[in-house]
Length: 146
Image (cartoon, rainbow, N blue to C red; front, side, top):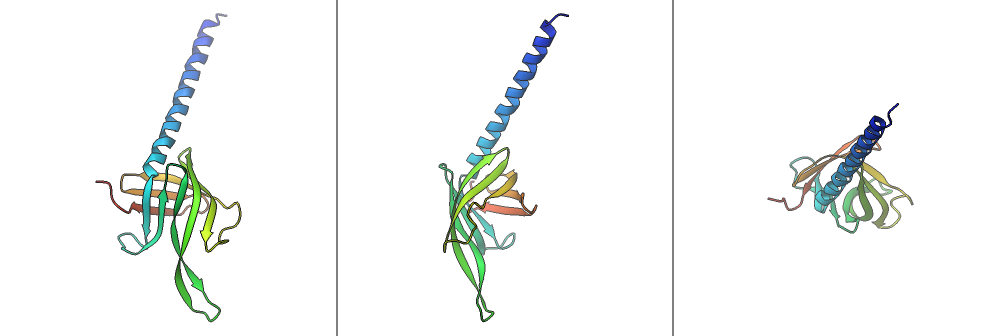
């Protein structure tokens, strides 16, 4: 049996595997670069009321706020704004967010993390799918890139 065709096939497979891995890394790098900046979530599509804002920085930090309803013992509720910071990275097309810190402190369990599949990312909008429950989350840039 001539080993040359087998070596050629193995070399070709290695080149294809390296090319695919390189494309995935470039894709993750381009997704991460596309997320840099400030994004907001309106209460509903088209609304001016913003319920979440997140700023992604090159050093892997995301800071911003989320709104929630505080419930008091007398049954009343009040909308409050919670400051949030966390670490982020993109891997295999998924946004990983971890190491949460909140103000007021202690609102997230220690070690809590979230994962979001990046479904669509444009200059002015991004659409995520939460891997925990499958919900889709729309975000738009605070200052659209035009």
